[in-house]
Length: 188
Figure 1: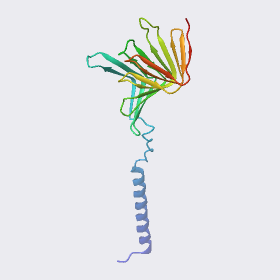
Figure 2 (figure 1 turned 180 degrees about the horizontal axis):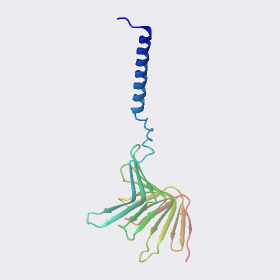
Figure 3 (figure 1 turned 90 degrees about the vertical axis):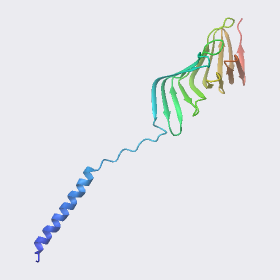
Figure 4 (figure 1 turned 90 degrees about the horizontal axis):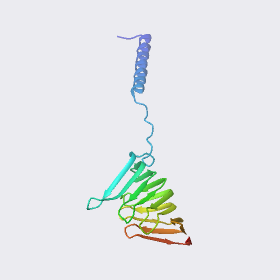
C-alpha cells in the first residue's frame, strides 16, 4: 500500500509537532538552574545571636564568661567571627573585663583576637585603684587568662597613665609588661 505524497507530508508534520511538543514539555518540567551557592568562605554554616559561654574550674567556680552579640562560624576556611565580644575573667585578684567591636576565634578555640576599640578594665583592688587598658587589637588566651598586643596601648590606673607600643598581661599571676617606647605620667 502506497501512500500519497500528501499523507507522507502530514505524517512528517505530525511527528515534528510531536517532537517539538515533547521538547517543550521537557524544558518546562526541568527545574530552573539553582543560583550558584555562595562560597562557604562567605556563608556561615552556623549563626548564633546573643552567644554566651561559661568556663568552670575543677572546683565548680566560674573561671570566665565569654559572650558576643552575634557569632558566625564558617566551615572553609574554618573560622569563627564575633560581633561585640566580651570576656569576663573571674580567676584573679579582681574581675577583668575585655570588650571590642569585633573578634575572631582560632580553629582550636584556644585563642581569641579582639579588634576595634578594645577596652580591658580591672576592678579596684584594696590597695590599688581601678585600671583601664585601651588599644585597637589584642590576643586573648581565655584558659590561661593571658593577653598580648603588638599595637600601641594606653594603660590608666587611677590618675597614672602609661603609653606603650606593645604589652603582655597575665591575670592569674597579676603581671602587666609594657614595651616599645613607653611614656608615663604619674600624678601624686
